[in-house]
Image 1 (cartoon, rainbow, N blue to C red):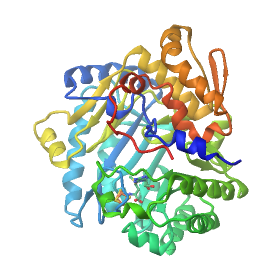
Image 2: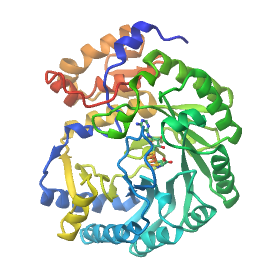
Image 3: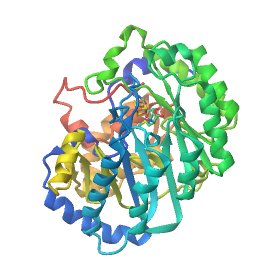
Image 4: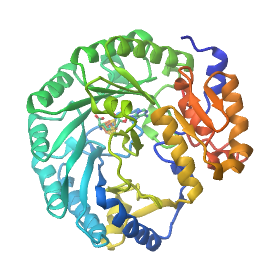
Length: 454
Ligand SMILES: C[S@@+](CC[C@H](N)C(=O)[O-])C[C@H]1O[C@@H](n2cnc3c(N)ncnc32)[C@H](O)[C@@H]1O
Ligand code: SF4
């Protein structure tokens, strides 16, 4: 399938990735923290019946990868580990005091930054007290992000012993010239050793993150990275489109923008890589994710059990995610909140015994329903509009859907929307037709808050 230049030009506009709806730029600063704590306590009581998700953000990295859009703190001083652990424990205590029963941990993810910046002993020190005050769900799914350069057999074994069965390695690109320009020298040997050690220890699923659209990448270099990746056969691959947001991620200002591939080159890279993934037996899960037959992500999609939250696609359907650590996001059915993004402010709030909340949003019933339409489209490629939404649907959404239909990206049958094979390439644009906050604010032109979709 070839994608016309017309579609490329038309749909290469800034759109969100929809890990939440409403998306973060529409959340409010200085939300009412007392109200958040009340909502947390109320929603926890219901959500905990089948277990909750816990996300812990570990922000430290030893060196700066210039493309990086994540919340990180660069340091080589490992003295920071114990202080950070003690602050996370204090934050956990704040939330424990709001829980009427012992939390049941169904999903746990250590993200970053670089969780493997912490020593294996310190990761046990971090999790020990949390496990002690919680119940571990029988069907738990615990995962972490590992950097191939510093994930040791010790890390993998310690976390395996702590119940982790999934690891995601940041691979990004194997080409030394590209690695030099992104300041991430990472011998392929390290990647190979990481996945082989994880498998020997017994990890059930290994994911690789790759990025296309980085400076100096070409279809040929991408194909080479993909072939090397396929030689190790990770269970899942996240093939991310490079998000260029130099106005928030200042490291990206170190690139010469002329070295960045053009949108049509990026799409050619995506198409070439996808061809190789599919030929090697991987399934296109959606939103740039691929998985083998045997992986839970694919099985869940086949069974209609796929979900999406701030951690990306997930097979767990929990109603509450608690995020601990700097910049971490929590989500309940009534609210989203994000912690302070600056480490000093985060520490300061905890020192004052205050929840370190920076911004958030209390959800309306309409937000919840439109959030569901967007998640349905991302996870299952179709959705059905409820009668209660007829008015905003016909006023704001339908005109945009008619245009998407004319371009062959969706099939529209009265109140049901199905994404076509062509439309899968523009899923973010399709979701944005349901983004009432974005549509209502479109008048507020000139405010570039998202990276381009391609
Ligand atoms: C928080 S990082 C954690 C991985 C770990 N720190 C490492 O580098 O190995 C999660 C993933 O986000 C992706 N990522 C970071 N910055 C990005 C950007 N600007 N555009 C697209 N993906 C990005 C990378 O693929 C990275 O592996
Ligand atoms: S990509 Fe990973 S290691 Fe590199 S700066 Fe970002 S979080 Fe740190």
